[in-house]
Image (cartoon, rainbow, N blue to C red):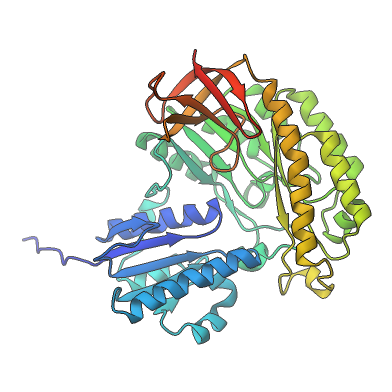
Length: 436
């Protein structure tokens, strides 16, 4: 005879930080949902008795946001608005002891790899058979697929290995299984993420297997686009570019954070590549896939960065003309190799340098976009907003890149569908068009 299940509390999961953190939240929420909880993401509403904050601890601003969010829900707990508050993720992994002392309102802190312990605290058994199942928080037509955890690189500014550990690849079989489950939910675009994509497979297969992974993922029914994020440039395996060129489902797009272009700073950052080597790599990539969209990020304000270093970086950006560029300011992270040096670039100078680079990129982006006027592109539509249907070409990743806007008064498209769009006008970071 079946017994009536005990009704469990409602949980709100708040995610901060990167897409890798988002995937962790989605996995956790799937386990909680199967454990009988009513779960919602990134919002708290009346009647939600438990809040779990999944934190980021990458740089100062991210840590500040995480702490402020924890304090916000600690106040809610003190006011009797929530019953339990739990914290997980990178900040919790790195500063657990300090956080326990400073914010005693939190019922428990968990590290990045302690999901089973968190679930046990909530009286939920970790179900191995759910591996690959996710509570999607993105629009249903795209999802992030985390192919590995951690990083073996030794970049002097980066604290990720301290929070995420060494590189650990997931098996091809597990990833294909997850891709099939995502496709069954309606996912059409897979965005492959890792701290370092090019390392994929080295630990478990003793050789790099990303090209093979792309080949088998492209055979999953329903998946139409596969996008690559976060590739390390040093000793870059060009077989990955061959895989992009040969497979029509793999977007002509590569996110490859370069961080800098001054040889002195690259050496201090322990990036294992020079300005000349980077230029040669980009030349080879564009030679193999002439219409590839290259996205990169640069880090300004590293200890010892002089005006000459900035001039070298600015000239590099002007010469290479990246399709997409993001700029971050250096954060002086304890326990990293760079922390032994003085954080000698003033914050206002860091901000000025970042703004200067983005002005250069704005001009480049505008020039590149103007050349697209009159061309027709396949567009995946993400949302409707402010009188426009808004989507992306294969050359753009969600939330960080350019968008294509089609006036809703002139046309109708279903969110999550592909459509051909002819570009009629362009701005620095947006394209406007009409259905072809």
